[in-house]
Length: 83
Image 1 (tube, helix red, strand yellow):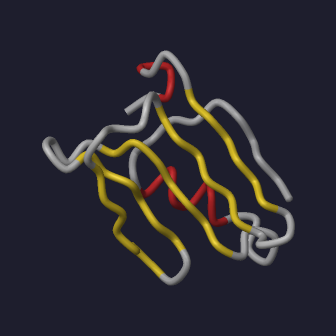
Image 2 (cartoon, one colour):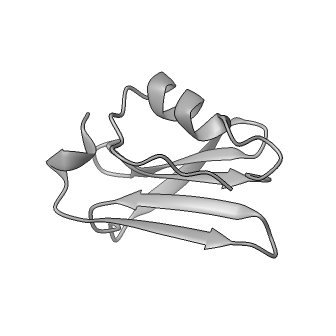
C-alpha cells in the first residue's frame, strides 16, 4: 500500500506523552486498534480490516521503529519522521 493512494494523511505528535500517530485518509466511523508489538498499534476499519493508522508510544526512545513498522506493514511512506 502506498500512502499516495490516500488523498490525505495526518501526523500527530504529543511531545509530553512521546506518542506519534499517523492516520491515512479519513478515520472510519467504526474502527479498532491492535497492539502488534509493545507500544505499537495499528488502526483498522472494522468492516473491511483495512489499515488506516499507526500509533507509537515512546517514539523518541526508538526512532527507527516507524520505518520498521511501515516496512512490516508494506506501506510506502514518503516522509522521514525523526524525534
